[in-house]
Length: 215
Image (cartoon, rainbow, N blue to C red; front, side):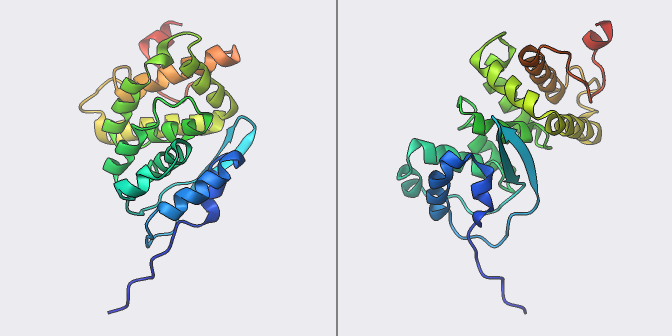
C-alpha cells in the first residue's frame, strides 16, 4: 500500500482571493487552518471594486476548533468564513455562508454569488431568505450586489447558466417552471440589482419568465 500524501496547508494562492488590505488577515487565518491533503483545484476570477481576485474553487481542510476561531479578530473570522464557503462538504459551505450573508463588505459578494450557481438547493434557499435587501430599491444590499454584477457580467452569466443546468438536471421535476424555482427567483432579483446600478437592461442567460416575455 502506498503511503498517504503528506498533509499540507492551503498555499499562498489564497492571498490572491481577497483584497490586498486583507493580506495580513488571510495569513493569520491560514495559520489557524488545520493541514489538509488536497491542494486547491481550479479557480475563478472576479473584479471587486477594481481589484482582481482569483478564488480557488475548492479546498478540504478540517474546520478549526472553537478556541482557534475565538482567537481571530472579526475581520479574520470574515476571511475564514469566506474561505470555508469553498469547502468540498456542502454542510460546511452552508454553515459558513450563513455567517457572511449580513456582511456589507464587498469581498464577500463573489463567495455568495458563486454558491448561487452551485448544486445544493438548500444553500440557494438560505441565500435567498437571508438577503431581503436585494428586493428593496436603492438599499445598501441591492447597491452592493448590483455594483459587483455590473463589474463582472461574464461571471454572472456563467452563474446563470450553471443555475439553469442544475435546475434542468436535478430540480425540474420538483419545480417544473424556472419562474418559481428558488435559483431562478434569486437570479431575477440579482439581475434587477444590476439593472438599477448600471441603468440599463441586463441580458438574460436563463429561460425567460412570464414577466420577461410580457416586457
